[in-house]
Amino acid sequence: MRKLLMTTAAMALVMGAAAGMARAADNVEVLHWWTSGGEAAALDVLKKDLESKNISWTDMPVAGGGGTEAMTVLRARVTSGNAPTAVQMLGFDILDWAKEGALGNLDDIAAKEGWDNVIPKALQQFSKYDGHWIAAPVNVHSTNWMWINKAALDKAGGKAPESWDELVALLDNFKAQGLTAVAHGGQAWQDATIFDAVVLSMGDDFYKKAFIDLDPATLGSDQMKEAFERMAKLRSYVDDNFSGRDWNLASAMVIENKAGVQFMGDWAKGEFIKAGKKPGADFVCIRFPGTQGAVTFNSDQFAMFKVSDDKVPAQLQMAAAIENPVFQSAFNVVKGSAPARTDVPNTDFDDCGKKAMADLADADKNGRLMGSMAHGHANPAAVKNAIYDVVTRQFNGEIDSAAAVTELVAAVEGAK
Ligand code: GAL
Image (cartoon, rainbow, N blue to C red; front, side, top):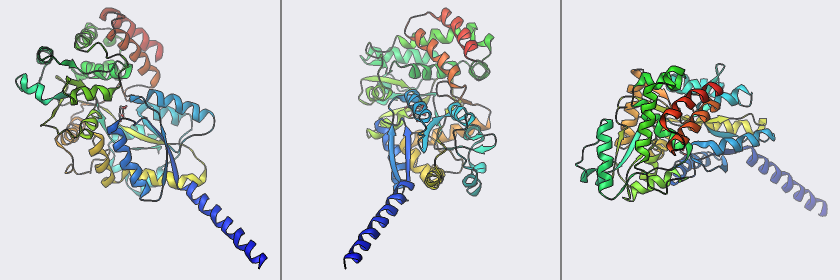
């Protein structure tokens, strides 16, 4: 009897251990910076999807829009030999980690599910390294948007601006209404996000030569000086407390009728939606004046790190779940982005989402789809950070536009 009892207890132990092991293997640890209301709501769609497949989620959030802080934490984790299963990542950062040999291989699942045919080539250039799939793209955002308070726009006559002059006139009107004309957070990546749009508004070629080709003559041109002048002009419409403000708090100023407009990527729409606001009724989404038809994109991808063999099945299941077309629709409706596949119907998307999807397809077809400098899709981090530094110092009035141009050329040359 005693022996039997012990045997039963031992069996229970063994079974418990087995169950525990199964739990450990069916787990993904995910590092990301989706901590705002809209971002967290979107991430929840992914968490729930995985939970429905019995994959548990260990959350590793690192707050900080644009992911600068997240990338610092990631470096420390990998250096200590403890890489997460999956990491939210942008453009060139993915390729940098691939170069270091830190990423896993998704080729089998990509082939089985035909990713090559449905994921746009513009994204594949960051999801693949040396011909191998290393990351699963979850969305396509773009940076050349503006988010206007509808009531304030109506008071200003209701016409959305289509040129720089019309934009300035609208901002003056918002000011006269007693609003903060431009809701902005003074953080380097946010300043750079506006710079993406301002540079693009001066022409596709100008944007490409400056940020993609890093052409010194373009970076040092009078036109670039004009771009900085425009930044200084926009700076004059920002409130006194903007320094260090998080982007979602700037969105909240437009949502709460305190500010007229925010220049921000379409993750801002996630905040409006989360607050129960409706496009067309409460807010208006348009492309930054002068950038209609062009798109500066950034795609959030989950880079899959090399993990122990027992963790690979859950990692692959996560990658497959991300590329599922039904999930792509559900997630991106909440996130504010367009799907990372070309075959997802736009049925469930609101008007801004439908526009994002149509603009993306058109820009791709017309050769007007360009990687966002501010969000790591034009250059590796070293160059991006060099540009950030100059843009932020000029935006804060530490250097004037002429000095900014000279410094931009030197900073980019030094970082290349
Ligand atoms: C971007 C990212 C978006 C959004 C934003 C603010 O870099 O692609 O998904 O999260 O940062 O955090």
